[in-house]
Length: 444
Ligand SMILES: *Cc1c(COP(=O)(O)O)cnc(C)c1O
Image (cartoon, rainbow, N blue to C red; front, side, top):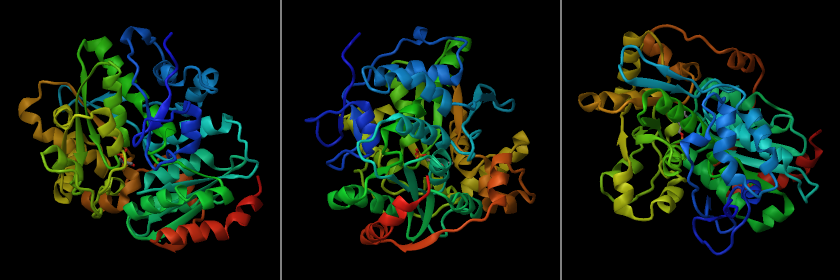
């Protein structure tokens, strides 16, 4: 057995912490993102060929948790977080192509996996501080609902969600505002990047932290990123056992958390072929991979709103993984898809396959279409959300309503509300100070 893996910031390797501390903190003290000091190597033969997704997750994540306070609890944490499946479905009209469906959780998007894993970890960690922990989450739509669902009514925790007002779908907004109890939704007069910046500024404010214990649940948290590796490993291992080949993935990408998890699985030595990042008109990553300098910018609004990110925060982790820029550019490719093409692809897909995909998933299918001439690899298109969450984009396009999954329908029946906030760092800090008492008053 090798030494337990410790974790340090992307910005300094000097001090290291065990995984439970990295998960509890969210962001590293210097503002960087936690990364493992090394990535372990895993043998495909170590995985139970008949194991469930939760079993694959427990085997995959064991070396990341070895020696930690949470190590013995890992199988139970995985069973809780991976209580629903991530099926890899064949697409009969596309030979060699499959779709990895990540939307069968309670809020119908892949964010459920990471949010539930993080909640299951935090619930088990002893806290020195008797005051409630406030979990801040910036969301472009789906993260907030997944985190709210995962922590709703969990004792000792409250969730504050920031989302860009008017830039999420009406159903997403309803989902964000319908929890109540220990969950507050703040609609910010700005974009997702503003929300993310405000959360980072609050987390980095030591005075505020001293007054008011804060953590984050964005994909900057390792507690969300690491579990996302599980469904890639499970799908790739299943494919490899059956076909003896490495499965390639096209990942709808915004903040780069989901795609980075896929890349890390390949770095662990598991059979993953190519990885493509499917981006919308927010072209920060496509331009970088085409050879330009990395240039974070303001996000523009698109029909695939959960990917409206101009400054993908996990880029720092990608750089850490591949410090050599030339090597990084060879490792993966990223392409941009405009709104018209996303809509046209969604429509074509519905005609060709008789099923509807969400706009983010359609972005990935648009990349698959570009690969059509040289499809020597088996591809899995990653389906990140259920189409019913994006009714305002899809229903006018298709000319009919979409069936709503039961969990979403139940949320839509509840009443919803959100407080308005201006897009300044100081405004969130002020709100947190004013609501510090309200926070302790929340009935647990
Ligand atoms: C969050 C999200 C994405 C983007 O994932 P990242 O990890 O931020 O790259 C894509 N599609 C949907 C539906 C999402 O909710």
